[in-house]
Image (cartoon, rainbow, N blue to C red; front, top):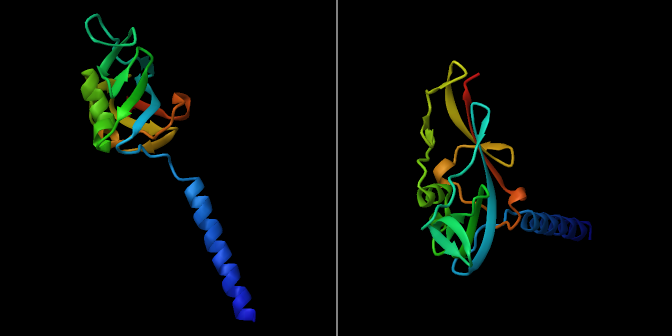
Length: 163
């Protein structure tokens, strides 16, 4: 009888762990169904904030609103990545694919025209990437989460002098 109670307790604990894991999992981009997600992009070079390039005349237009990029992956002059459409392959919506779509050089060593080793306040600088304050080295391979509110998914690209 004691063993039966112990097994039930273990089963309940495992079940609770699975439910907590399921409820706290990151909301990944679904495949083959419509999505509408956003991520805010903060770029700092030597302490100065930079904006994503603006949409220009002759670029895309969605419902009367200009955008830069492609319909699936674009920005509306708001420093926000807009993911809108059906994703067949998550690499289609990677951070690298976004920067390619808006025409900005981007990888682990370069954003815009600033490259690791360039001077920042008299010292050699390098790029770091953070998602919601947590450092990551994913850069081009980062896949934004399926989150509608851009304030809940902030991607920061920071170029500063090495400490």
